[in-house]
Length: 198
Image 1 (spheres, rainbow, N blue to C red):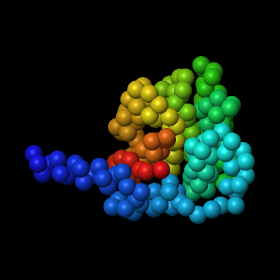
Image 2 (image 1 turned 135 degrees about the horizontal axis):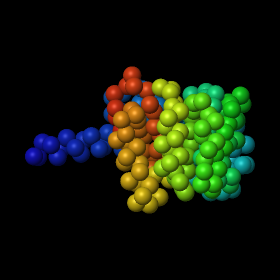
Image 3 (image 1 turned 90 degrees about the vertical axis):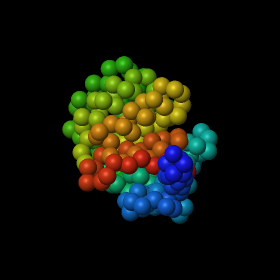
């Protein structure tokens, strides 16, 4: 029993790291080069003008989404949120040729999802009918799709939903950044979950 407890503590410490101790080359690269990348991009100043006034976290998330779009170079990006919560410029500044679809989360019927063939990058604010929207967009994924789920620790419902996503058989690698959860679906990797300081 003592050995099991020690092993559990060791795993938790590794998974709470900023990349150090992470065995997977893919996960280590993503954590260090995208999530906690410290270099400055020339577009940061424009992002800060747009989103810095809304608070420090919003500005940090805008920068993260910029880096994420720059990293995966998506063709189709979808956002499920209200108009005031959109961070569309963060995606456009990283990759200007994206086809960005905005799915209004304030409208109960998100039928626009059915008009999308596939989604490369999907950002969803966990508000309103997010469970239904998630399930419908999940049908549009490819092995290269990435989901950003914002607000995973907002309340008990979103925490429970995030646990369900982590355990979902389609979700392969998941990263818990506290403010957001990031999900990869590439079946060539082993299923793994990381909690990362962001």
